[in-house]
Image (cartoon, rainbow, N blue to C red; front, side):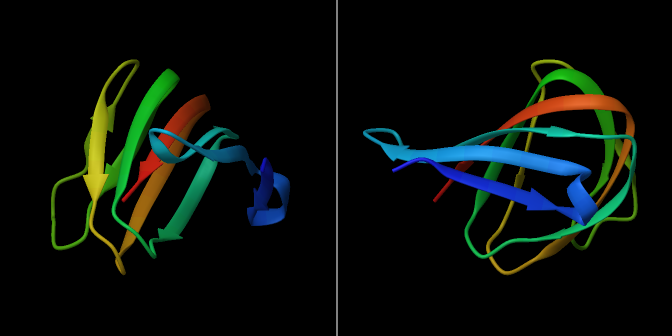
Length: 93
């Protein structure tokens, strides 16, 4: 079944499904600062655009660009600054 999600007053939108590869989403983020929470382990990949991420327990902001990935453990929060409209995919475990 296809699921549509909208967060942060419509500034982050995604569409997702479950298939043979697991639970996946593809989405778009507008410019802005966001704090995300995880309920499952997440593998995020930037498809187009770029963002800055501060991962849980970290003190260094990392810039993530096209075709780059980062991972966040389950039950964590992480900060994202989107510097240009960005398309991403996320796989959950």
